[in-house]
Each structure stands twice: as C-alpha cells, then as structure tokens.
Image (spheres, rainbow, N blue to C red):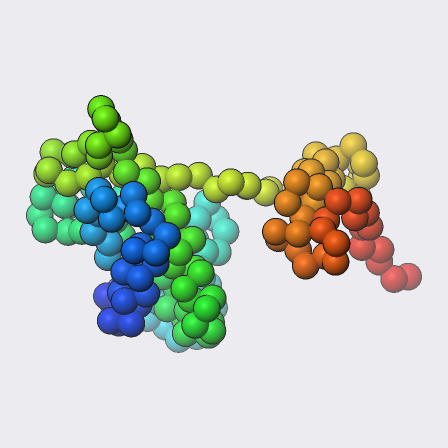
Length: 183
C-alpha cells in the first residue's frame, strides 16, 4: 500500500519561487498547485513509489479533474517519490519540481486569456517533453548506424550536445562509440 502526505512547507516555498521565477503563464492564470509525497508503507519495498508507463519516476504532475476542483482541490497536483526526494541535494530537488511545473500549460482562448473549466478555474493541459527517448541497446548492437537509436543519439549530440552533456567545445562532431564487452 502507498502512503500519501502533503509536502512540507519548504517544498511549497520552492514551488512558489519556481512558479514566480520561471512560469509567468501559471501566475497570470492563477493556477494553484498541490504537492504530495508518496512512499510505500513497507520500508523494505524496493519498488518505486511512482511509475509512468511502467518506468520508475521521481515525480509526476497532473491537472486535477474539474469535479475535484469544484470540491476544493487545487488545479494541479505534483506527486513526488518521498524516499528518492530525501536523497537529493537541494538544487536537484528544485530542478525536479521545476521539471514537473514545466509540464503545466494553461489553455488559452480569445485574446490569449486563460480558458476556465466548469468550476471557474483555469483549464490546464500537459506540455510534452522537448525530447522523448526510447532506446534499445540491442537494436544498436544489431543494426549499428542504421538503428533509429543511433540516428537519434547523433541528432541529439549535434543539436544540443553541450546542453545535455559536458563536452569541451560543444557536441558537434562527437562520435558515439558503442560499449564493447570485455572477453
């Protein structure tokens, strides 16, 4: 069984600071955000407390359904894996929360004003990641340069290598060398 609890006040302070600093669209729409910490009730349970499409997730965000908003809930909810969160340095905690906030996007109508839902609250949609990677190492081993994973990896390095990786002089021209098993 999972245990849910509201996050401590410092987490809400970080969320407020991040929203004010990086998400003016959420401020102008008046979006309210709740943060819940989740963990397993069994401390020996090694499974992640949160998963997304079958993969472990450190956190997850959603727009709260209008029925729940009408009942007094906030507009959006961030779930955070409590066990993992406790292990992160402060800057990584803030980056994780900011990542989830980046997903939230008010739905805009005429004159770029936020549309409202049936409870009179701002409608939200979830922004997709700029990049979504789903790779199989086995496909690269079998197909080498023809593997879609290899094509995506090269494109990532050429388009944004320095953004994601700390290569001296940028990422352009960096050659990906597959890992070779020692025999």
